Image 1 (cartoon, rainbow, N blue to C red):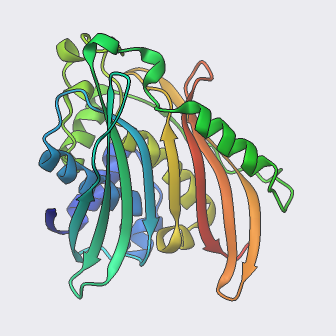
Image 2 (image 1 turned 90 degrees about the vertical axis):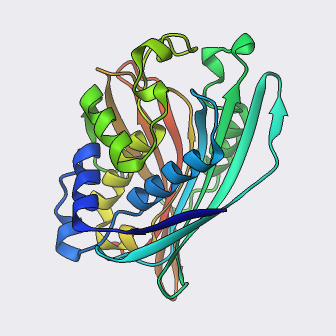
Length: 280
């Protein structure tokens, strides 16, 4: 499936950073596009092509930067969509996206899973998919640590606003009425408008960029599960810590546990971030 080609202009990058509230000078200093911004733009196009029913829920997301992408560069995105999987009243659809530059070289890979919920079986506890597998995965990570996990990452704190959701929908192309239409959102299991999953994931990327700078833009990867929803007016915070370090010829390969929590402590995002980086 061809998703389209885009020139990643300075205006696009600034609009994206404004929508997610990321004011780090890193991107301007290096002239590079945040990988999650590119993944968000590709996902917006993917959702348009899939023509999912209103209110489809983002469940899982992987993003991996393969090469740094410069501002002004033109890219092309393609997707392959797997056969739908069904469980109870839910249908899961997974799509893998590959983004290439004008030479055909891969610059970013992304994989998204969304679920379509049968209204008759809607339950607010099912927003994040199979949480038990996430817990098992986290337990395995905690037993495989090879370094002191006391190194925590800087907290990024945000408050969700409707203006922010409107701006994010415009720049990403993700116009799911669950994020924009109060009347429609009130009929869903959430009972009101919630933030885009990729918007809250941008806060994790900001945390990683703040700590690791350019190496995050060049080699960063995220693998997360969306486990809860952030509503308009909610205050949210990122959390992260270094869990493992492996020395390789190309540098130090780091694995971090990352997440986003709501104001009541509810886990909204849980997962891992990896990158190649030389620790100071």
